[in-house]
Length: 539
Image (cartoon, rainbow, N blue to C red; front, side, top):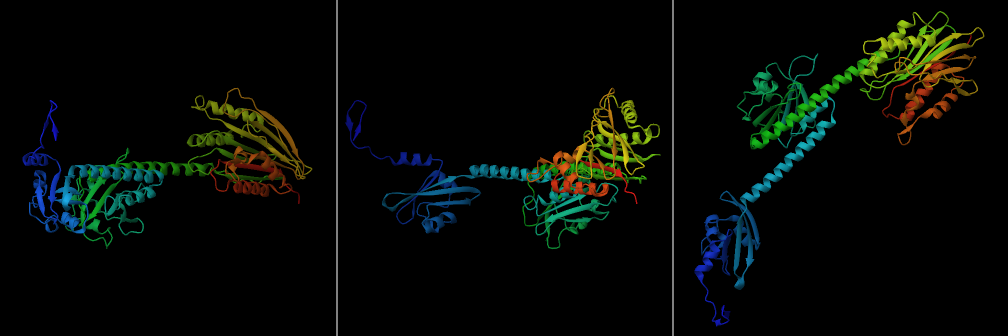
């Protein structure tokens, strides 16, 4: 019964088949209904477009849409398939009298968007992983191996890096290869013809990009020689320059098997982005290598010299370079012979790096020269301070050095007299035969800090069996121990020194260095320098 607007009633509404058909044909989904036997009874307009094979009277189990036929035959209520170039997804709804209705949606665009999103996420993840791996390596060879390994198998089945090593290595092209099945990257030296034999390689080494192209017959024979024998026939290859701020660092060649799809535009863009990051990493590794080499050369030039023999005196020095090869320190010591005995210096330049190395060399050279005209420690320290400020960049240099500068002369009674001037350096320690330790206060201000700096001087007599130890703060500030953060400290230094009472200077220095090494246990550390002096034992 139906109610009218004026409150009256009419009889039952008569079904309108034409209206129902229009409603079905207006749906965006394909609708296919079947009777109790699975025979198609109705197909709407959308179904006619997407599934033209289905017409009234068709048995779905035998229809020419395999995914749908299979779902019906297995009693499944869903299917997902590619049909006539479209992605279709269907679901079955049970109706009265054992009839069924299949609702089929065209999800081609939806699937394309989903696939594009997943592909973009995958590319982003690849670049993130590549950036992380490349960023962890600061050595050129490691970076080259990582660059060859990372694109396989995501971007290619084999990756080849062609590069020219830095001088003075020969100019022949070198290569690093990694392919599916390789246990590790393989390296080699290419023939002189390699660059010209591979299309696009010469342009890439000059910094130009080329389009991906098929592997044409055996034309790149020199490139085929560097691929694994088991690789099979290549299909396509893509060559990208490894660009950096300083110019091309090499070329990346990506090779795919013949059975794999070629490089599409997104692959090309991803390969170019990866190559750019790899090129920047190679440039950073190259710069690091040059700096590390420079640091090694400078450190070698700053190593303390062999101590000259001094009549009536026994001396020993010890040195440990900073744990980080780029953190060039400025700890140093020097010993010079004089008419009456010897002169010694032990210092610690403020700062790290090339600037500290330059100042260390300047201080040592200045001492070498100035000691020829002045051998009194206090006066020589003043001259040295003035000389540093008289240098061309002395006024604007913000570096200084702490210094102990002294003379030592043997006594007739078997001892020695030490006269030592201080320039802001830790006080030397006097070790007596019974293990008692006392500092020799000298104070003073750092060298090169102020033009009006003042310095102090002290004299001490070393009786037979007594020893004077000068050291840099790299000893006391060495961080290690159980937590690897605690400093060695002056207390441990004194205890270690006391336990070495009665030993000759060389044994004392060796013992202290061993204890500091054990405390550090391989941790990075600052420079460590020490110098021990005493009267020589009489025969």
